[in-house]
Image (cartoon, rainbow, N blue to C red):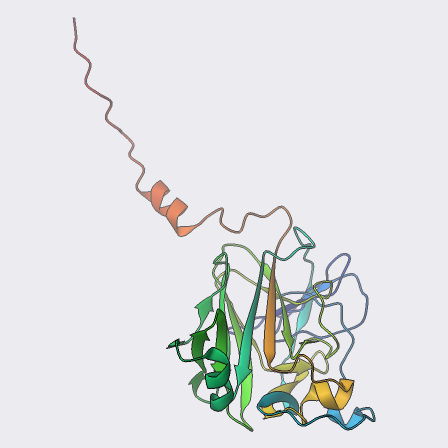
Length: 275
């Protein structure tokens, strides 16, 4: 079984949950295992390159950004076992992306911004989008998190495991699963991420060794439009987090370790008067 540093990833494939170690997962439709870096699993079939795009009817032009099928990027993975604690994710998050003008229009006038990774609900992971030399700017407004992208630039999804156990991370871009490029679902498997490790997904998986880079494009040139003849979910990135069955992700939290380190061997009891 192969593991890599920094973007250690595991992809879970099903049943016995085969997990793939890598920065992205590989697919092979319904199988009994998961994919991991030590990252997760994926019930997935390989996505075909944009050259396989099906014939489509004329799509109504839409402004803003989408995600196209970029150049091939090396991203080896391996498999491992991972059984989910529940079919229901422990956390579900989304990021809406667009160009600067689009984000301004969607977020409204009352906004705040920051950069870098942001904790997801429940605190199991923090995640964000990396493009160019650093993390994309986060904009918050009208109850949503937005990220500003730049036309023609590649980007990556970054997820850091903050818990004390392995987690399965299922990701989607424009409503498509990153493992197979097909419509996303909680039932599909994702990447397995070890405690304290960071998963970096650079694109849609094309094999166990490579991915097609995520690249900001026009909506019309998006992979969703060219391959699936739809732009309905263009502009959204999704993440579902699953914990492992029988494992408490916070069992050895920093707080618990600190309490044990500071435990007193001679705790003083209230003084008792001798007779």
